[in-house]
Image (tube, rainbow, N blue to C red):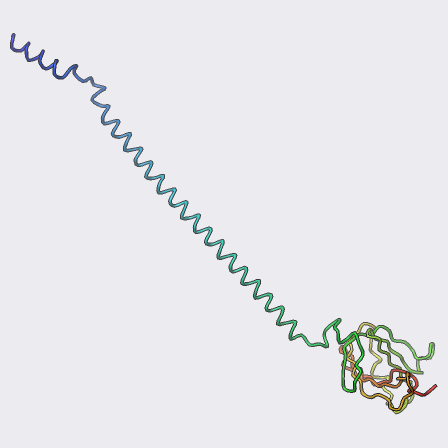
Length: 209
């Protein structure tokens, strides 16, 4: 008995108090808790990495969209420039050419009709006169030619105010008195009806009444 008591006392002195039941489960619980923290940390790291990658992809996509939009805008500008450069002059509403009458035989200008009236008010059979936006004017009789210009009133019966026309200078009178340039003849083609009217810019040629 004395020997057993000595062993028991020796064991208590070396090991201290015996571990309780709670102490036996504490270490496994701590191990599990640490494991959960590590797994959660790893999962968060993976999630954060995925979010970062998705952000980079979105930024890359936004840059690609912006680049494509830039290219589209540049193509639109090039298309507009090409269209303007190839646009026929006759279809221009207002150009430098339409602001002045042609001054040399064979030259043409595009303009529009501002008024159409009878040459003599109340006498529709006595001819027509037309004013143009570029300051041009034409007049012709109703029954006969004027100063060797053939009568062509019928060719402009369907003309309307606002129609675009192309005026080409056909002839300039010669030996005119200084300051009197009446008698210039124009071929004017209506771009809507495609009809041409040839007439002078005055009822009398230079040197006349």
